[in-house]
Image (cartoon, rainbow, N blue to C red; front, side):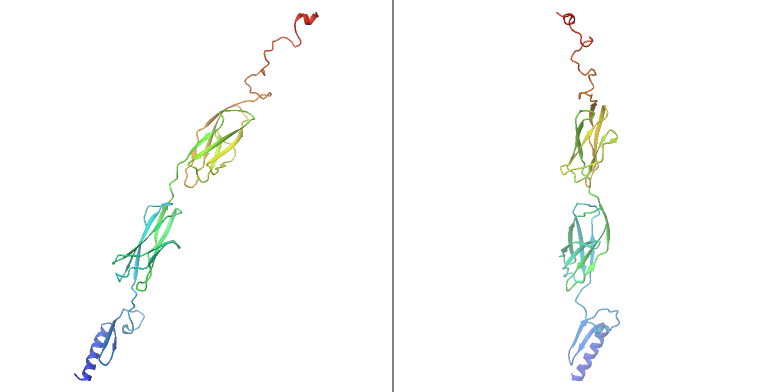
Length: 281
């Protein structure tokens, strides 16, 4: 075949290839073709070289039964057009805050990534994941997922109140409340029946609170203590301590003996004695 016929054949092949959407380079006797993509920027397809970077997508999965203080597995599935290029890593977000990341595990047709998340606050959380690709896969971001995180269940508490079974008016006595398990915070309100005995008392590090009190009236007094509760701990009320209060007399004793304990005085007038003492010896 003559050189002129060879060139004519190459030209025909090139025209067909260009019409099919391929970029063509020609020479005296060689034609090369590179696949072209569909472009929307106004440029001719045969002036473009196809990028070797594949688009990707990512789907986020978050459990429904989330609770403060409990770990939950948040997973992401990555898919791109080249099934053998599911590499890179995934960033997990709570709102705009990055909470963790994990490398993508390639499963040929898709890739997966997981992160164990322990929520610290209750309420609504807006979750998302971002796929950080590789030279052959584009980055992508998942749809937003709105999830609800429940508050941690409260630990039930019990309280024991100690104090004296008896007291005298005007005399200071002490009462102590012990809460278990030992809570982190909260207060105890001591009461005489329905009447508060002062302001609520903060719990100490050992789960104890105490007061001193002076009764001003005699009778029976039921002293109770009420724990307010704290984050993660329920409130509780102690069993009442019954205190019998008696009146203190002027001599410092109780009013149980109204004669003051005269030691057996008779009804004789003062100064009386035997007949010999009266008339002399």
